[in-house]
Image 1: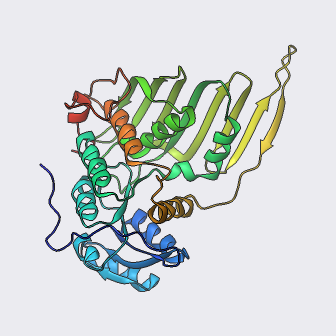
Image 2 (image 1 turned 135 degrees about the vertical axis):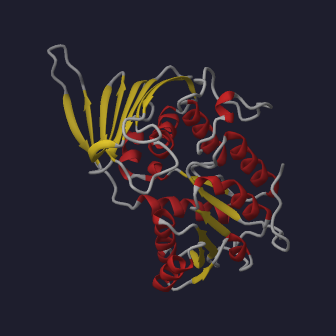
Length: 349
């Protein structure tokens, strides 16, 4: 059943003019939402109008620091006549909030994952398309300068394999999802982005060692382009590590996403020697780059770098990796009429 917008919030979609800032609000002022608000308050092309959170004390604290209004929920945000909203609320609220925002004629950036189920994600995508508003999914890792340097290094290369490690200590804030939805979904998105193809086969191995949900995941994939990929992620490592290794026919590229160092090994010789060089990595805050891309899409109507469709596809693969879900055997279809077992399995309990 389609979600109905709050009475009085629907309005025609009008994109802001080039000489006007994008009037924007943030709903969900936890760690990520607070960071969104901080960056938006500093961007010249944005006017941070208000932040919203049921925790009024937290919302007011952030609003006072950033010089904007504080309201209780996203409906109060929409009453302020915004152009766009960032949804950083808990995942199970993404679907109803995003549909309200879209129905009001506002563009929306939804933090990853886009929704709790694939069906909900597809409904958000369909609503945004019908209303003609911008929908972006917050896969911020794509905007990490080291990731972009890796992407540039493998451009036009014949890719063979990708191995990604994303490990660290257990986060106290995390209680309703495991490592697949919290961490691995980033790397599922990167694999699809690096290869420019969908994931065809999934072979997941997961375990709940100390947590209620999976806190270890070893995930193997094959893409439609034939690339083999592997994700190693857990909440059991006492330190954070974020690395990407990409093998091609002619080179081997290693990226450290925390130190933002990218190294390329190439020019293999019969005697076993090879050449190595460190690639230049730009200095940029990934969240700022993501939000700049979103604001540009809102202004121009062009597709954002991470579309709603891409967010749903990555979510579908992630859900298929969860314990009790059937592994995906074919590339995801955005127009499949019926839910698969993977779709029925929610990302959240």
